[in-house]
Length: 249
Ligand code: BJW
Ligand code: ZN
Image (cartoon, rainbow, N blue to C red; front, side, top):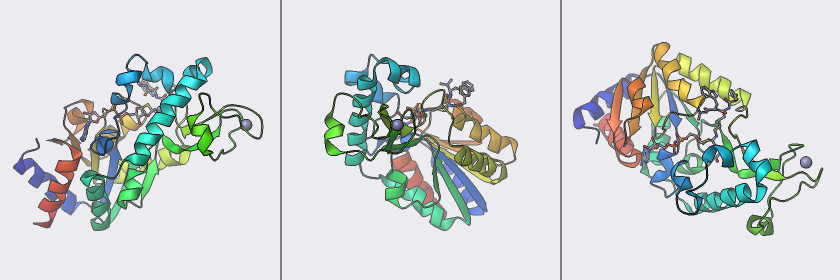
């Protein structure tokens, strides 16, 4: 667990900062019951490789398998509620003079917790588009339970979630905004990411090289903790509210 003196140091840094950048990963939603990306491959999915499911190659090989995996995860996201970690980040946005939140998550729990300045690096699991012509496809209830992805009404191509798979480009404007914030902020806060997927994983080191202090919140030490000036060990749903409380005291 992040100890009291580290929480105090982090709270002092957050209070002084004029501009804060924040990067979140699947860990911020874990306490809401949304499996982290690697945990999402337990149970029924334990024998599948995430790089295969979340890729064009995997979709081409077995579109039904990929579709069912996403429909199961969509249901998990819809049932979930924001946790105290999401709420604390929304409160931090109100407090800070400038605050931008970049999430790798495809859920909408930050929005539902009240965050406003939020950018999705890897898209959204609740939107759909054609894999061939990219036209948007509003999902019908019956399509959710179907064993195969629906066909595009425009060109007949397979419909897919509007997320970013391995080997695909992140939305250019979102990535440019993230790099701009990372290279101009005073403080960069990282929460709940394993830090192994690029280009999101390069943002904390970009911030550090540009002169920002970096704080990492995670129950497990990993590549992001090595990059950080301060590592607060523990779950986001506990550490982030503790940080907010320390800022107020
Ligand atoms: C808690 C907690 C609690 C638990 N509180 N924490 C440079 C070097 C090497 C490779 C590349 C490179 N640049 C690009 C690449 C290729 C590739 C890549 O990064 N590969 C690596 C695996 C090596 N990147 C790409 O292909 C990207 N595209 C790209 O760069 O285009 C140009 C290009 C193409 C090809 C070659 C070169 C350049 C696209 C990446 C898209 C990633 N998409 C996914 C799927 C999204 C849709 C979906 O959700 O299904 O995004 S993959 C998956 O990983 C998902 C996540 O957003 C992402 C990150 O995972 P995250 O969030 O870190 O989750 P976990 O599960 O890994 O970790 C959870 C963490 O939470 C853990 O640390 C826990 O301890 C912690 N935790 N409980 C706080 N309560
Ligand atoms: Zn189409």
